[in-house]
Image 1 (cartoon, helix red, strand yellow):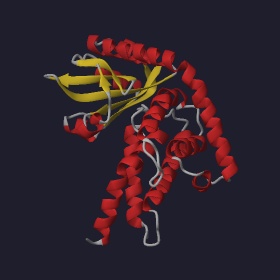
Image 2 (cartoon, rainbow, N blue to C red):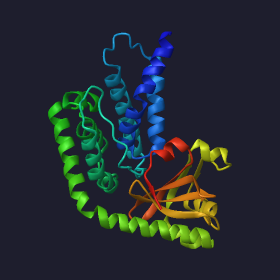
Image 3 (spheres, one colour):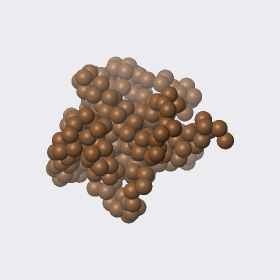
Length: 289
């Protein structure tokens, strides 16, 4: 086996962990995929002959990629996209984490993270995700975010308090999100263009994964009018569902789940919709009709 094949194999061994880290930081499946792909490209461009812990090195790289993406998003004054799913939890290679503890952690922060997604600053989120979810020492976190270990600890603590405070309002927030998704599906089925515009943020973006694109859908549709036109009079076979506890929608054909629709909702309007048809990605979700 040559070095390229060996590196590819090691990367695949760490892919699910890197996806979990990126997803928790970015809150978007599509953006997490982009971050993991960029990590692979950087691995191919780097000399890792002296790297003793490749898993730790990859975690550092994907964290820095995510930090750059978060900072770029903040500089454009965009609302974070995403749909945090409680089951995507991994751990730092070499760290002993009990699977039951991971599941409990996921359940406790899934909805809370959805609530505070738009409030955490980039460095706060990176510090919180790496330390609290993946047990990365503050010394390593500090090197990634360019702060001292004490500052990294303070950032994680601040983010933790916000998550804990948001947990108290998560239940009511979920109910409101479900109402918005139901209203969107109803307006889509009836072809009520004006009602769709009311529910959509002016800068809403719909993103489709490659499996959806192969079905004939565009990879991206942006703007309330364009998105309303795309969905108006459609979604007749789409039904509401919980996607790992988060309100969303699904499309089934002859009893088979073919596509899921993940909604990003900020301040009562839909800012993003992810259309996902890849069987592996759908398989990661706990879908309840």
